Every structure is written in C-alpha cells, then in structure tokens.
Length: 180
Image (cartoon, rainbow, N blue to C red):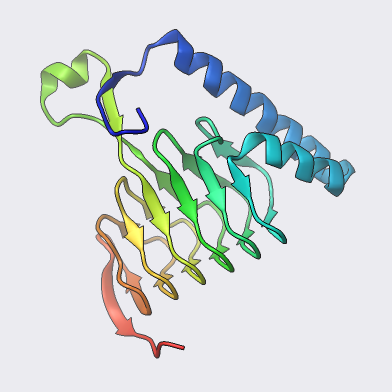
C-alpha cells in the first residue's frame, strides 16, 4: 500500500491497523484534556514521528497514524483528517488550521477495479514553514514547497512551489512571496 500499488480495501489486516489508530486517537483526545504530558506519549504511539514542540489539537482522524511524521514546532489545530495509507510528511514550523484534510488514498477511474474494492495511495509532502488554511484539502501525491500558503477552503490537486500563495478549486498561484 505505501508503495502506491493497488490493494483491497476490504483486507482484514487493514481493519486491525485502522482500529488500533482509532483507539489511540480516542485515547489521545481524552488524555489531551486531562494530562498534556500523557497525551504527548499517546501521540508518539499513534504517529510515526513527532518533533519537539509539536502541538496537535484533537480530534485527529487518521487511517494508521504510523505513516505520518510531523516536524518540530508545527501547530495543528482542531479536526485534522490525515488518511495516511501512503506517507504524509509535514515539515518544521508549519501551521495547519482547523478541518484540513490530507488524503493519500485514491480509487481507480475504471469502473471494474473500483467496483472490486481496489484502491491505491500516493504520498503527501509538506515543506517547512507552510501555512494551510481552514478546510483546505490536499489530494494524493501533492508536494507543497517551503514557505507556501494554502488559502482556506482550497483544493490542492497538484504540487505547489515554495514561497507562493495558492487559493481556489483547484488551487492556483495568486501571489509570489519574498523568500527569506
């Protein structure tokens, strides 16, 4: 699956992984309001890698969690959906607003394989110091460059260069930013 090959979404091993992730996400949300230190331990169990100073506000919805890495100093606001069939890499010092969706799975366009329950996935990579506005959706296989801004509600269907602002559906460059 993580290599992008077609797989059966009905495989029982998938259910085991998603159940584990769902339970840990619930445990994380509960611990977050009771004991932030304990919550950080649960987040470390859920996600593949969590850098220093990362803040993730629950709820957090993932497929597996283990295919997600978040760089140091990144802030994730409430309601992230990160379907991590393929790897999701989030850089350092990013800002991810409420109800952002990072979606790595995709379904075949051909009706037969889709009817047979096959799907695949492509990784998402988010550079350093990226801001993704509320309700934005990032589709499979997208890379977002360092210092980019994704406007609220945008649907990112293709790679975004660094140091630009993109908005809309599909997201398109509307401004170039000064590189630091």
